Image (tube, rainbow, N blue to C red; front, side, top):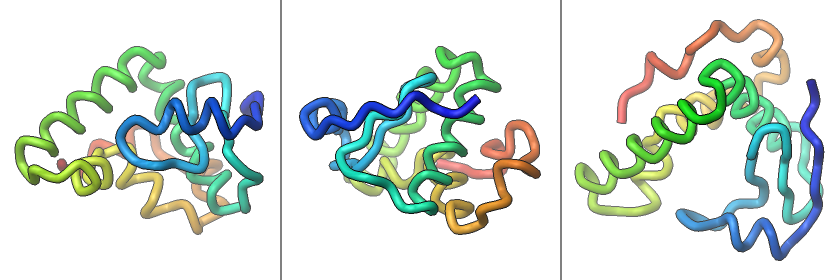
Length: 113
């Protein structure tokens, strides 16, 4: 399933609580500030896979947990964001356009906050 894309600078800004983001995945929606290039879209599709395998609620629970753990560990909002396991997987693989098709379930588990 491909995301339902909502292009809205206002919504994207409101959703950028932690860091300023060009896009936010909220399964089944993708809220974008501007058009995405293929690598940014791949990044968001990786998040879609993560959200599906953790039944959405599990994804957001772990996402917040990782962020809070990162804040305690690094005492820096931006670094805490980039150390979230889901973000590490997405950023490390966003340039591999075949990644989503061959991605192993729960691949994010190999990353640590």
